[in-house]
Image (cartoon, rainbow, N blue to C red; front, side):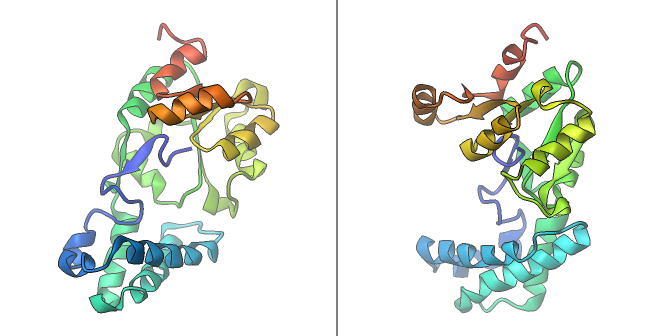
Length: 232
């Protein structure tokens, strides 16, 4: 998985791209309570479900124009124009600096790349690959599977199978890492080794005490030792 496991949004919110408050007046946005903004994001999320297949960035741009049109319709006091909606959507799709790599992810990738094949199997959209290219990290990955390009979503086993096929390995040769137990359960059911990531200290302790199906890790820095490359 990429989101939360490898990368995080630079703004702190997955759907607030970097130039959002250059395009949208922050003063007006702040007049809404958190519960109202969260309700708007939840309403707009329904648009994403209507686009199970998003094969190109052009498709993705149209998707996010519809997404932000719905979002801002829920916040009418802002009086956002179509031009502003299109600008926010373009920033969401075309700004490769919208996400940043987590420090432990950068370290683990750089240590493991020369020893094992790495793959991304992400619930995301085509522009995610630009994020990796922009950060200079794309070349580390032998497989890059984006759910919406296949019209799939986790925990569909076919998403994992697509990555295994591109890597040309069997499930028993793979280790899958995710912060979602549901996704780890699906991968484990296919025969993959699985590691459940819990960066939060309390969540890590609870998972270590309660999870018997998956290895539980607190940092991706544990991966080299976990797979036998602790001397990399």
